[in-house]
Length: 80
Image (cartoon, rainbow, N blue to C red; front, side, top):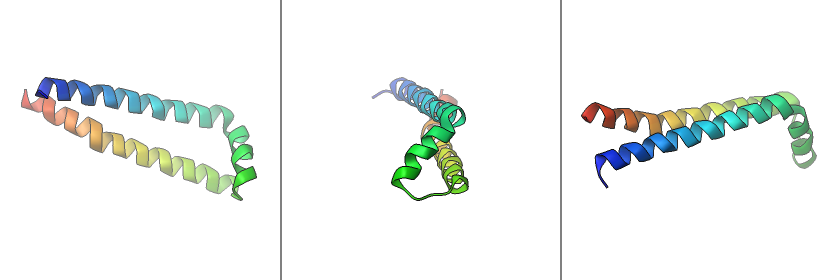
């Protein structure tokens, strides 16, 4: 695998992962109550804990994208 191919792969991975993150945010913002009611049927959780869990999970996902996609992509861009 060449550096250009790896750079392209990381760029596409970052784009796809940010799209998933954006979709997650939009679904949580638009239909958060309905999703909470659905999940609270299965798991006993308060609304505050549910929102905190989603915020923490989105933050962790965003950090993982930065660490595993964006940082290596930028490092490869600096090599050129």
